Length: 119
Image (cartoon, rainbow, N blue to C red; front, top):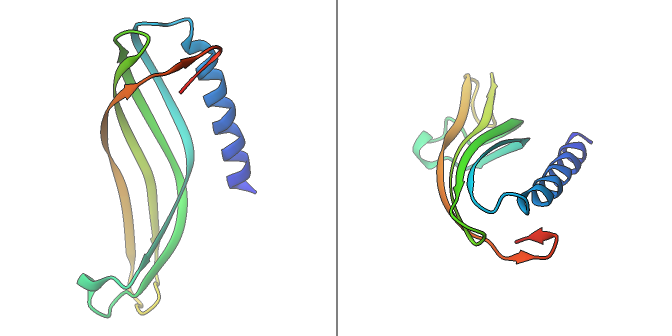
């Protein structure tokens, strides 16, 4: 259920952002996003036999800033935080574990205007 709500909110945000994109053919833009993150790790070779499977989920979010050069190209930098999953047991283990994933993502976008929407 939670993923359905997140997917609907994300779709609405993407639709709204594409509607406003027609007004801004160039310049600075900022934004953010929210979603769900699911981690499944099977057969972790470097952990020997201590952990054989981790399966958990958390909320994720991102913020971004970009510069639109013209109607067809933009540069963007995203910071994405996929959340943290923690627990006291994993299959094959009786110890504590923690998984945290986040990072920067630089991007160059090619934009194809198609009337009221853009790809």
